[in-house]
Image (cartoon, rainbow, N blue to C red):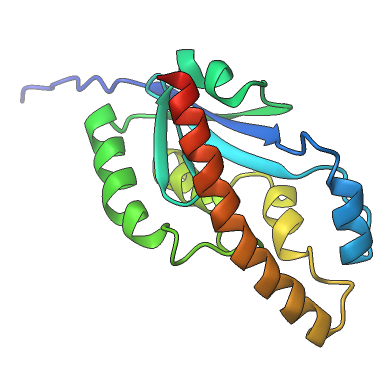
Length: 177
């Protein structure tokens, strides 16, 4: 019998959490939601020298360009382990099944956002879940409101957020170019 040793490459995977509340809106949001809100968090996944995230669409940026485009660094970084999934497979997954699942028509500020995208990508890459507080941050956001008020806040938020994301994306891309 001939034994073959198969070597798999191992790529680090990092979860990057940004507080995008640059205008101090978290306390205002907290008053609206009737709870303490310590930040407005955006989540991305770093692997293969790129950062992948979902705002109004699935996006990718070279890690070396992230600070310049965002204008600030992550406030939390989590080591999610490693993946043996090759860069081309990651691209195919992000811009295939995830792009279909995560787009401007499916975006929801509380229940289908960048946190959920990062969860799905990390599960695919490492079979590990992201910290639950990130999912809860959105999904529990409306928990202190009456059903009627929660519905209204969710509707208004989901009308405003895509406009802001598309505008910020255009601004960032122009600034980067």
